[in-house]
Image 1 (tube, rainbow, N blue to C red):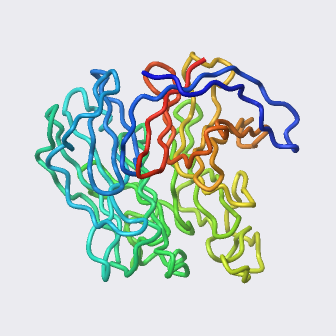
Image 2: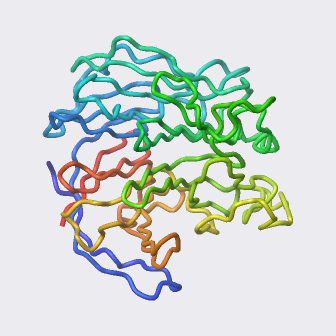
Image 3: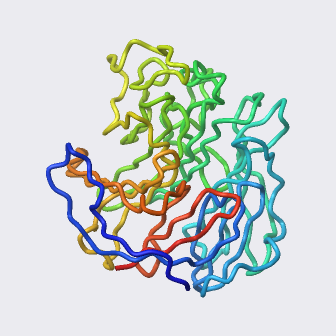
Length: 365
């Protein structure tokens, strides 16, 4: 691997933060030449899988060599604007069943939404590919799909969705999936303890509603909590503690305004609608998220790391309970749009840069 930059964490800290732990780091390039990489998964044998928004799943060797040909068998994604291939995540029992999951935009420009597929990875290609979920209804346009996934302790999965951008009011409608989080069994069936199961006119897959465009998802097993973040409009990006059956308010409440400066709602809070743990105005455009639980950076234990597109940094967030007590902007010296951040099995942080010549970067002490 080739070293590209050295820096000092803590160089950019928010004025409102009382204290930030500084740590030296170095950044090396693992792989480059990726077409808008979106998500990263680590295989047990040391190899890595990376999705490209343009629709390909790429395989990296353990030493970071990008295999020339994309992985075969990937379901066809609708690719346009924000639409394409999104998350790749391994089944919790991957060592036994070799299954993984892919989220992607499916359909046509006139009628599309977010799909979820399950497949078996045989070491070189995908087989036994099954579409297990398709968000409804089909909508026009190519924006706001969500696509991030987290597995809970019971091996059900939660996937974040989007409001389709032009249908934001539908995020309050439990009769569709727009602007919701859905919880599914791995075969796509509905868990019996989902919050609205059996209620007439409500999609049983829904786990929570009132979201705009969920782009980060983490299950914190130690604290038994699900955390997600989502894009606000112009400002009002949110970090949320997700609880089943709750309404997170979009677009009835928001800390942001429309892109032309128009007021979307005069309210930032209302009874019965959940408040974010924190919000970011101006917008940082949060994308991926990881909870750091490794030993390589002991001072970062238990911190969230949130990749940011518009912010061109990775935001380190320190929590005490469900309260943010410190934030820090890292890796801004690279001046890159960061699409994803992951904790590697070696304890390093891995970053994906959002570019037609995107990179996989590795952060070590």
